[in-house]
Image 1 (cartoon, rainbow, N blue to C red):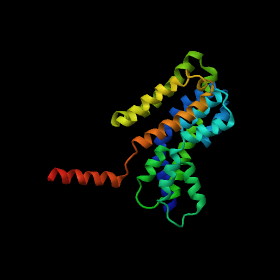
Image 2: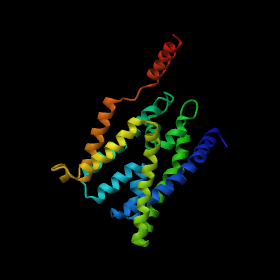
Image 3: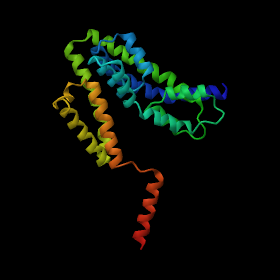
Image 4: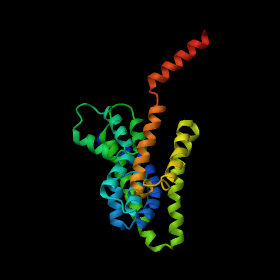
Length: 250
C-alpha cells in the first residue's frame, strides 16, 4: 500500500471513534427531526450537509416552529460560525501548492472533533487524512439521524419524549465544563438562560418567532461579552506572565 493509502486509512482509524460518538448524538437529533416533520431521507440529507449538533438542532427546531427560510439560514449560519474560524486556522496549515478544491472539501468536513485531530498532526495538512476521517464519521452521523427518525415513527410518544430530552443533556454537558473553568462563560450562560426566558414575556419581542429571538440574543450577548471581556491571544498571555514574574522578582 502506498503512502497516500496509509494516510487515508489513518484518517479512517482516527475518525471511527468520532463517528461512533456522532451516531449516538445524531440518533437523538433524529428524534427532534421527526418532531419537526422530516422523513428519514430528508434527515439524512440535512445531516450530511450540516454536520453540526448545535446547528442541526437549531435547524430542526426552527423548522418545527415554522420559521422562514431566511430565519433558518441566519440562525444556522450564526450557530455554525465557529467552523469558519476553524477552517481559517486550518488554511494556514496547507502547503501553498494545495489545489483549492481540496481546501474546500476539507473545510466542508470541519467539525470540533475533526478539527482537533487534524490540527494535532505535525507538518502540512494532507487532505487524504481528512477524507478518511470524513468518509467514516459523516455517514455515521447521517445514518444516526435517519435511524432516529425511523425509531421515532414506531416508538411510543413517552419514549420519544424521553429520547428528545437526551439532546438537552448533551448541550448541558457541552457548556458546563467551560463554564466551571471560566467565570465569564458561566455568567454568559446564565444571562443567556434568563434572557431567553425574558424574551418570551417582553411585549413585541415575544411576538417574534423563536428563530429570530435566538438570532438576536446570540449576536447581542456574544458581542457584549466580546467587548467587555475579549479573549486574550497567546502573545498577550505570555506578556502578562513575564510582567507578573518580573514584578514578583522585584
